[in-house]
Structure formats: C-alpha cells, structure tokens
Amino acid sequence: MSLNEEILKLADEYEQYIIDCRRKVHTLAEVATKEFKTKAFIIEEAKKLGLPYEEVPTNSVIVKLDTGRPGMVVALRADIDALPLAEADTNLAGPRTCHSEQPDTCHACGHDAHTAMMLGAMNILTRMKDSFNGTVLFCFEEGEEINSGVAALIEALEKYHVDRCWAIHVYAALEEGKISVDPGARMAGMAVLHTRFIGKAGHGSRPDMAINPVFCGANFLNNLCVAFSNQITAGETVTMGVTMFHGGETYNVIPATAEIEGSFRFFNEAEGEKAMKIVRQTAEHTAAIHNCQADLISCEAPSGPGHGVIPSVNDAECSAAAKRALEGILPEGTVVPCEHWFAGECFCWWLKKYPGVLAFLGIKNEAEGYGAAHHNEKFDLNEKVLKTGAISTVRYALEWLA
Image 1 (spheres, rainbow, N blue to C red):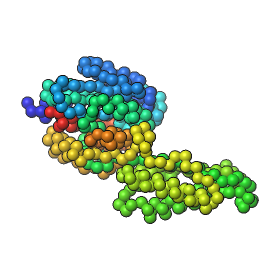
Image 2 (cartoon, rainbow, N blue to C red):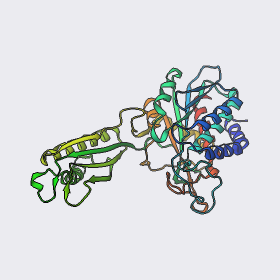
Image 3 (tube, one colour):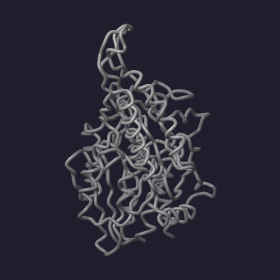
Image 4 (tube, rainbow, N blue to C red):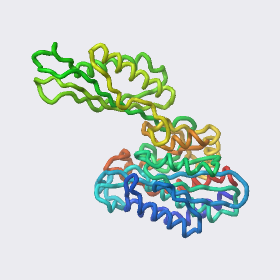
C-alpha cells in the first residue's frame, strides 16, 4: 500500500471520529483563556494514544509524537477558543447539526473544526508512526481571538527546534472542500487607532474662549484620507476603518476632548508601519494647527506575539511542497488559488519564526446553509470538509518526514 493510499484508508476510518470531536468541542464552546473543558478533552485524547503532552502556562497544549528516529520537527497548530456570541438556532438554510451548550458563547469562527481535524490527524499519524522519521508536535492554542496564547506557546516550542509549521483555517468564502495553500500574504496584519484630541472646554456661544477638539478630530479624519491617498505606496493595500468618533454630550457645551477609534489592515508589514507613521504625523500636526494636543493612546504597528497581528505570510518553498503533496492525494481540482483574507490571524507569528503554511479550507455550500460570514450568529460548520482537512494536515507533515 502506498503512503497516500494508507492516509486515505485511515482518513475514511477516522472520519466519524473527527465529526464527533467537532461536535463535542462545539458544545463545550469556551472563550479565550477559559478553555478548561476543551483542554481536558484534548489531553484525554492524547492519553488514549499514549502520547506525552505538555501543558503550556495558559490553556494551550503540546502533544508530542516522536518516532525515535532522526528527522525534522514539524509543528501542527489548531486554535481552540470560541466567541462571546449567541448562535442562531439555524444556519442560512435550516437547522444546525449541533448547538453550543454554553449561554452566549459559540464557535462562530470554525476553531471547533480546527481542533477536530488536528485530533484526527493525531490519530492517523500515530497509526503511521513506523512510516516516517522525526517528530510531530500537535499544538492546541488557546485564545487566538485575543492573541492570549501565542506568545507562551511559541516560547514553549523553543526547545523543540521546529523546522516547519502548518495550520488550517476554514473559510466561509471558499467553496466546499476546496483548499488553498498559496504562497505569500494570506491574512492581514492589523493596527488599532485610538487617539484623543485634548482642547479646552467652554460654552457654545463663545468658541473663541474655548479650544474645540471636535473640529480638530474632524479635520484629522479629512487630512488622514488625503495623506493615505497620496502617501500609501501604489499597489499596496492599507484599509482604514474608522468606527468611533465621540466628542461632547450636548448642543451648547464645547467638550474638553474628542476621541476617535478604528483599525487598519495591511498585507505588507513595512507598509503597515509606514501607515502608522502617517497616522501619528497627521494627528500631531492637525492638533498643532487647532492648538490641541494629540494623545495617541494606541497607534503602533504590531510589536510581537500577543501584541497584535502582522500579515500571515506563507513560505514559498513550503507552499510549493504543500501544493505538490496535496494535488497528489486529493481529487483533481481540490487545490485552488484563493484571494487573501482581510481578517487577522496570530498564526502570523509562527510564520514569521518558522517556514510554513496557513491553508484555507472552503466550507461554502449555500444550498445547505453554509456560507455566513465568520463571527456571525448564522455561521455554521460544513462537516463534509473535515476529512479533507485531516488528510491535508497529515500529508503536509509527511512531505517533510516520510
């Protein structure tokens, strides 16, 4: 039996197990830093396989499969946290397969699928242990939504000298069962803006005796739009989402402060840093024109794990290897190109440190109700794709270990 044939045979055998794991994790649905039951479930599954595990000083877990033979170390990552969101009783077309049992908490991003596919891959690779060399690290990461677990997990991986890494994110905008392993930037970096313009309060009848920060804030937004259109590098994308402008409480009182919040997304780390420099300069110079002060509470490009996200950039060699390996085991037309995604992912810090791939796995099937945007009460997981995800995870690992 060939390597691919063995993987496919075991994937068929474990498909229902993977589905059951997904439903179990979905019912548990725990938010970032609170994934206690989910963590206990993962550890129990590792114990069943006799695999050693390490509890990272958060709710993350590293399960180790060491063949005892020299070879590469491949780290496979799945995030395990849910969202503080009440899910709807139905998806876009009808009843859900399973429901969260936790009030106002649900897996509306697909992390339940990521965890289940990883557990399936862990079982398959354990069964195939005699077919490859080196070490596989199954990494279950807490708190992806708030970046609470990534720093401690990467620190815990230092002693293993990781050679390659891999993660999957299910994607509601990609057709059911399709998978993308394109090279380059796949998900966006993000920087947050929170600035306060400080003026001088006064009566609305005498603006000359006050310093109105509302005009300063409004002028700042206009100036920023002009600065972005003329200074962001042509061909690069930096989106600007200003979502809050608050100044004053009533019609006849000039407030002392005005606050603006928003976020920026980018696929080039250097361009993101440049954008934040433009924002800072624009805020400071606009404030000076209006005799205000600019208090830039948050206006920095991400600085490291646990402090925001940079673009998730797939290594070219690893992407080429993944494409070659997956095209050899999955049906023709399964591996497809896909536009990059404007959401952020803390797997970006893994990809900055280790060569690897963040794959997109499509779940969209509008006839069956799968396709609602992530972080939406109607989001639902298409379980038909879980086997494909497990196969892809196993095959990528064995591309470096077999």
